[in-house]
Image: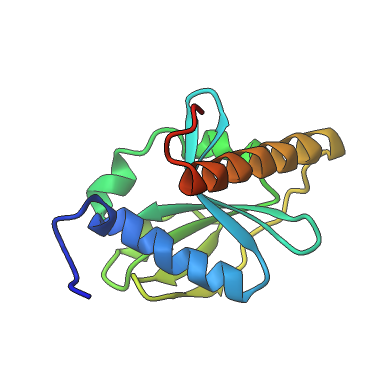
Length: 150
């Protein structure tokens, strides 16, 4: 199969997310990309862990991408742990302290730093988990029946 670099799924951030999702799956997490956690807040990757942990990963493909991001702090109340995912060329010293760090490329990723944990309240955990389940099931249904009205 040919590797098309002009396809939308070949954008640098999407390729980082793909590698992140592969690594999270290897850790027993179930990842979902481009997930809306609240109105106006769409995270790159949200993953549910085997014990119900909620992790959010923001993929930054360049310094300009990082500097233009104004919403990432709004994601913190929606997860137990927050991570930055960057490639090997990204200047990691600009990333804020206290969060996890994942080194990623299109093929996989490595968790370099765990970062601080801030446990979600049970009601918010339930709301996030239900929303992830419903969104994932809708996406699966759409994949099986592209003509279905969402």
